[in-house]
Length: 135
Image (cartoon, rainbow, N blue to C red):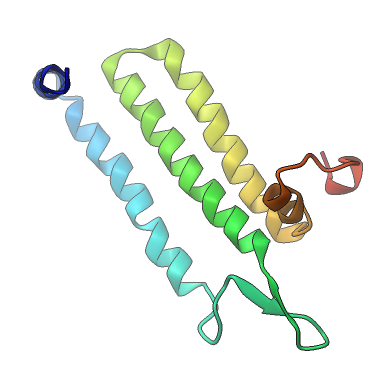
């Protein structure tokens, strides 16, 4: 089965190249490859980004950073799935992936101003009252 899949991949690449579409896929991957150095350069240099100190000097987990990183990875993956479906002509598959990419990016953005949502993410529970979070 894997061998058959590999054969199909090459056929798809050949067809997309023949019609001048395959060249559009590679730049979309490079868009996100540049994202990780940007995250790295904007992360804390003095301490790990996974912990922060309270006013009393106690280190606590910075779940909001983890949530943002997870959501950015999810957005990248969903975007690339959507582009892949689009270039193969599977139009009905695109909308769901784009929606999940936008939602992931939105959650990552929201967690900067409302880091408390990361606590719920870490616990795997829905926030009890979504109004204060702006939802």
